[in-house]
Length: 368
Image 1: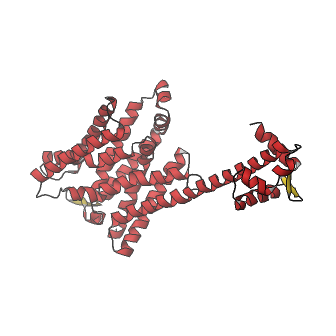
Image 2: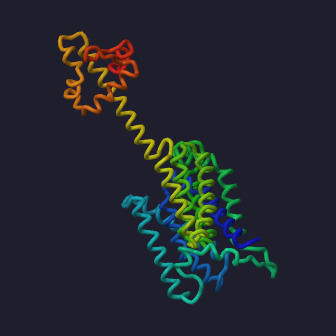
Image 3: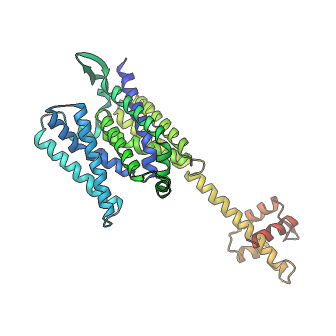
C-alpha cells in the first residue's frame, strides 16, 4: 500500500469515526465537551505512559479514556451544583486537566515523544511509518487498524443504540418513562467519544479530531431536519473533506491535517450560505417574500376598508397610499404591480380598486 493511500485512508477513517458520534454531540449541545475531552485526556495519556514505562497503545488509550470520562463526570458535578452553566463548567475543567497533563509532560517526559504539540496537531503524514508489529510480524500501518476498528465499533454502537440515542437526545424525560436511562446513554456516548478521540489524535492530532467531530455534523444540520440523513450527510461531508483536503495539501504543499480541517470549514460556510432551508440566502429570500406578501395584504385590506365610503376616491390614489402606508414611491409601485399581476386589484383613471379575488383575500386576512 502506498504512503499516500495510507494517509488518505487514515483521514477518511478518522472523519467517519468522528462524524458517526458528532451528530449526537451537536444535537445534545455537547460540542464543546468534545473539545474539552480532546485536551483533557493528556494527563491520562501521561499516566498510561508512566505505567507502561514507555509508549503503550492500550495503556495509553485506557488512561486517556479514563481522563476523558473524568472530565465528563467533573463537568456534570459542576452542573448539578447549580452554581455554574455548562460553558463555564467546561471552561473550568478542561484547562485544569490539560494544564495538569502539560506540567506532567514537561516535568517527567520532556525528553520523549510525548509533547503537547504532537498531541494537539499530530502529523497524519507519519501514519504510513507507524507500523503494527506483533511477535516480530509486520501487520501494516497501525493507524489503519486502530481507526478502522474505531469506525466499526462506532458504527455498531450507533446502529444498536440508535433508538435509545435518539430518544435520550430529543426527549430524555419520555425516554426515562419507557425504561431507557438517559444517564447511561450519556456516559456510553461520552465513553465512545473518549476512545475515538484517543484513538484518532495520535494519528491526526486533537485539532483535526475536534474539527471532524463538530464541523461535518454542524454542516449536515443545516441541510436536513432528520437525524438519520444528518448522520449520513455528516459522514459524507467529513470523508469528502478528508479526500479533498489531502488533494489540496498536495497541491499547495501545505499541512494535510490543516487542509482537511480548512476544507471542512469551507463546506460549513457554503452550507451556511446556500442551504435550501437554513442558509443565509434562503432566509433572506424567505423574509423578502414575507415582506412582499405582508405589503400586498396591507394594500388589499386598506382598499377594502375604504371601499364604498366617501373617502374611497382619495384613499385609492397611489400617491396617497405612499403617504398613508409610509412606502417609498419605488416600493409602492412594486406592491401595486404585483397585486395587479396577481389579479387582486385593477386601476381605473388613476385609482385602485379591488377585484373579486382581492375582496376574498381581504376577507381571509381580516378573519385571521
